[in-house]
Image (tube, rainbow, N blue to C red; front, top):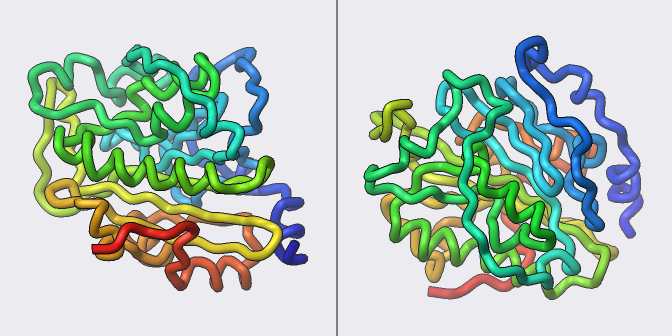
Length: 273
């Protein structure tokens, strides 16, 4: 394995101690249920560098939550082949995240008769390796308003691409994924919470294996996203960082980070036009 990658995996981040959320009024989870699979952790990869308002930690993913949008700025998770090969029957259990102060959280009523679907950021079909991890993906903190065609076709196809890609890896190898909405210009909103409808969504993927490391990003415009034309939506991680104001890969050694994030390196074969 590349020596720099070994160094990367041994780093302990200091940004955990620098996190800016006001912890005085934010309740915390106690006695989290442990999984047989190791989720992405702050110590291992690092919180994207941005002053999000609240950090939410679940058994298989983490969320940097923004109060003004009442949605996640980012959702981060690590995938292993052993995880994606488990298939459970989906059981919808959408629920509000009570750890978020009431005035800053989305509600189930916001989506009722809105014309928008409750779109997962950390995918239910990807993190269903335990019943508990699957259930956690239905917290509204992990949900954004999505148009039906976007949610059921283009976005689903991108999620399936990532899942199938990981399935081809050797056991123990991991892919790190960050995903979330982005907002530009005048926005529609839904519900009594005035929940803003994203302009689009992004996904950033980092792959580390014994031979090399690679990274790439996708933008997924809400109005027009056809994953069969995936090449049109490929972007560098640097591009996604400018779009979102986030800084990913904060624990990767700087020279490796610059190398990975400045170019587009698909981790698996993409569909062609």
